[in-house]
Image 1: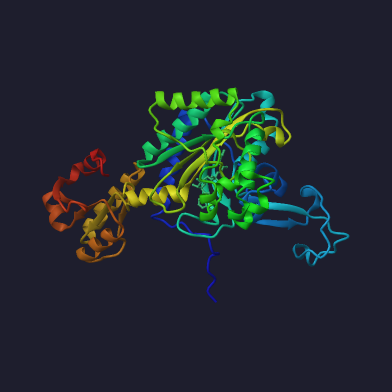
Image 2: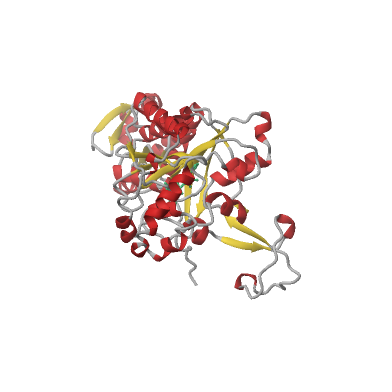
Length: 444
Ligand code: HAM
């Protein structure tokens, strides 16, 4: 019986993996320039970490988390299974104590948990951390939306100033430029803080109560607990009903207004274009003040390539002192999809494919291929005797950038043929200078 992969969980094959590697390498380079260090956190955390931080009334916590019961009571909080619960079937409710664990749906909660648990802040509260890895959300799979997806994320903890908000946006802007991603637009908003958000919440709630009948069942259900979620609903009826909803930007207190004005000024000074979107509340509840999304028009409804914002209350919510934070995450699947669409990063095969005809040519080529590989150049050659045509077909199939052709004639004349596979142009190069020649060429 053939066993297939799970829906929404994908393999990433050679050809594709190289694009991922170059995106990750570019991210690491830029993170290092901005003085971010890598942190590696577990894929599994206690469920309450996510419900407490992301928010009970978010889609992620309500319906998208991969949660399971772990029998090892020592692993975490002990809870008693409710009687009759299917999730606990097969376990004696009165004796087995279980822990609810969840595959991480995002990275911020885990990073903050690690920061608090290790008491990193005692030595130095300001920490700039980044992570790269898989996340899991049980969403309906579609183009650009997977159940296992990958994020490159960053969190700057310990700084409440607006400069760091602008810095994270500049980092992203630099990253997009470095990988050659154009046509992204930046939207920003401010969600206020504990001083001004409650006032906005009431204003919005009063507005929504007058339109309850036009809202979807989901929004009606969670509106009283979390009215801001309604602004994030994708149902056409809800979008229409909230078209003229009061803007949160009109409710900001003076410190929040000033903070947001400075972020905007800094983006202007550094020439990062943006638009204001007062409806952007994000799908996670921990945000305050600055929030942002970088979107593309090329991925249909899954338009967000990177998103994030400030979360000044989260460290305290997770048991630490009052320490602010700001960060973002970008989806690697969406990034690589866009890159492929732009054909900026076509999945090139080897830089060079050496086509040899005859044993003498093979024996000449083998050590040269080895030396070029030692210099970090990606080179391939056949091991068995094949016709010139068949080797050229193989080079084509592998998407080799160029081909070096060596046979008896070339060995005699001391000149080999180098063919550019894209332009189809050929030129002769001296065989005794072949390594130096190839190393000097940009395409190799
Ligand atoms: P998020 O908006 O939920 O934020 O996700 C960030 C990015 O992850 C999205 O913009 C998208 O590119 C990618 N993404 C999310 N879900 C999927 C999916 N199902 N399939 C493919 N890609 C997906 C967060 O996760 C926050 N932790 C970001 C953050 C960090 N805020 C502050 N610090």
